[in-house]
Amino acid sequence: MRVRTERRRDNQQWILDWMVKTTGRVQNFANEERELPAEVKSYRMIPRSLYKVGRHYQNIAAAAEAAGHAETAAQLWWRACMAYRDAQHAIFQDDHAEKIALHGLHMAAFDRVVAHSGADVETVEVPWEGVQIQARLHLLPGRRRAPAVLFVPGMDMTKESFPNPLANPFARRGMHVLSIDGPGQGISNLRKIRVGADNYERAAKACIDHLVERPEVDPERIGVCGTSFGSHWGPRLAAIDPRVAALATTHACYGPKVAIFEEASPRFKQMFMYMAGIHDEAAFDQMAERMGTAADGGRIACPTLMITGEYDPLCHLEDAMAFPCITHGLRHPWLRWPGPGRCGSSKTSSTAPRARRASPAWRSRRSWPTGCGTPWSPAGCRRGRAWCGSCASTRGSGRTSPGGGRCCCRAGTRAGRGRAAPACPGCQRLAIARGRTPSRGHGFGISPTGTEIRTGPPSARASFRAPSRASGESARIPRMPKASARRT
Image 1: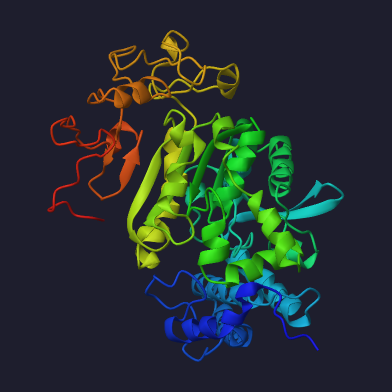
Image 2: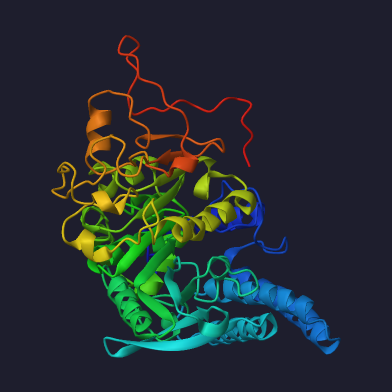
């Protein structure tokens, strides 16, 4: 008779059940809104309870269809789709009949959303290492040639989770998007395609191969967007694939995985061990130790946006700040949402969507051209020259940066066409290290919305002041916004 649990923290299940009952959540307990019905009193009740919720929305959606209310039906099918997704996700067993049935309902509901939305969404199978990675390709109307984004979901998501065909932020900005069920996710779980320490990025690279072959996709303008654990896989992909022209990540899981697997809800480790097909906790811990990002940030050559919460329970701020692309030259924009919880708010219903919307918005404005409108060439960056948003006519004529690349903004001077020189890997780092006030176009600060922005675009910069040596003030601490500044 077995009396020991599979994981050390499995004996805390009664605490998790209590949190599920009192907060209506299975994780991120600092957030105030409930995600589960009030009737859920323990974790094991989640699948059946959410099945009833999904079935309720499905029945109303079918009635709306019969009455000819297509838009109402589409919205209801989307709610059913999300309820079925969360219902199947709470089951951590292979070949489980209930999980398979719930996942089938989840995919069928998504198909009904697509049918009513008028969106052009293809289900594609991408060959990879002897298996098939299933993905949803959201194409622009008319299938015109345009940039594309590979969306990397988190560990609690499926390829149907985002984007919503009824409100696709990438399509509104003129981009195709491929959302995948990578190893350990969605239908890959049912196919027993397990996630490992380093195989997800290889599968994602195969998905970029598929995008490059599509006639609708501009192969020189392929970006990657990762959310939650996708913020771990996204940088690892960008580090090994030079075809990634831009990277944006949010709901951070940068750095070591101690916070998510040892400090946060025990459900994270339970879920990831199932995704990996590992039942020995010691073996899983060894794999988790190899899942850092310390060796990846320094190899990322494309423009990068990183978003994290100031008190994010799954990624401590110091771990995010230690990411190599920040510590080695500060060449990428970095945003910090103030406050507790994921992306910095105790009410993710208001803040998390803003953080997720920031990714496609930043990419559509900043990924493809330079600041003067001259198209940026990834090949130029691969030749060892540091990219910056200044005038391409001065590319390669500036000083050498600490990373060995060449900066085209000439260390804080006004470069080319009278434009202010933007931040770069070399001169900004040197200006801050010497204790000087960074020149216009350099540095980091606090935006009027209360978010900290490092090497941000000119439109997002705040004012700066020189640090006082007498007061011992640090040159790395920006001025806080005025109390009257309204946060949106």
